Amino acid sequence: MANTKMTRDKVGTNPRHAMEVLIKENLPILAKSMTFAKMLQMDKTLAVAIKKWPWFFPSICHRKDQADLTDIEKSRYICAFNMVNNDGTLGELVDLHNGSYSQHTNLRLLPWHRIFLLLFEEALHNYHPDVCIPYWDWTNPDEQHFPDWLTGILPTVHTPTQTVNVIRSPGPEASLAGVVSGVPSAMAQTSYNSFTSPINGIHGGVHIWVGGTMSTFDSPADPVFWLHHANLDRLWWVWYNSTAGNHQNPVIVGEISPWTYTEADTRSITSLGYQYV
Ligand SMILES: [Cu+2]
Image (cartoon, rainbow, N blue to C red; front, side, top):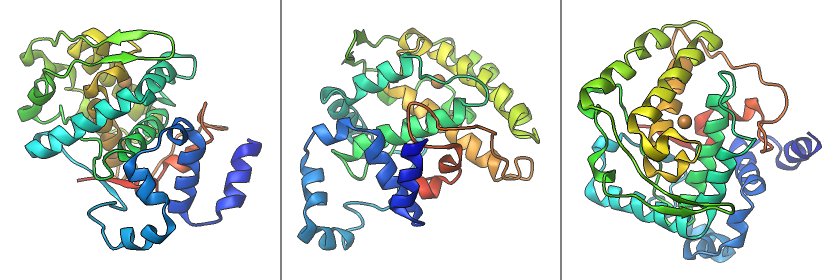
């Protein structure tokens, strides 16, 4: 708590700056790795020039539908994922998800994973400043199958405590529509609790449908984990801004552990630095 208060005092009222400070505070492993992108960002004389190259260090991440990605965008996501795996960040995130901090209760599932995805995306930016987490829109009948471009991507992830060899065994394609059939009724709910409860169930259903590593708490080792959770995060944002959601926030007291983010920090995705397009 004291830490959070210090952050608020330190950063004042600029939400983007506040988020940058929070990210640095909450992903210490980033400080251990030095990449070319980070070197450029740290160079004060280059900082001015970088602002003039918005395509090089975009100020807002555009999270796209995975089905709309170009081949180059797909390979850049895979490349950035592999880099973040090789530098140990992914392994740390897997253990964090697997450990006692993991929050999968109805109330905390969405805010906890919003921060979790943000820290992963920040790690991707260490290597590819223009790569954002795509979302897998399994509510779209055209996407009710495993994203084919990730089929052959089965990484080995060394975490601080274990080695995870990613495996999968997707269920029949025809059954995925049934797994997510509760989405329209969830989106029509008029309280956060009645929205997040069925969403949590659908979330688990897709994890189990993909199978293998995705059906365990080691699931962040699978590159599709991030696309799955980006879609949940997107649905939450759509619901929040809808008439039914009416900008309701969950009642979460204290920090979203183990981070110094509070529930209020998770309310605006644009302040966090991304959008769904
Ligand atoms: Cu999950």
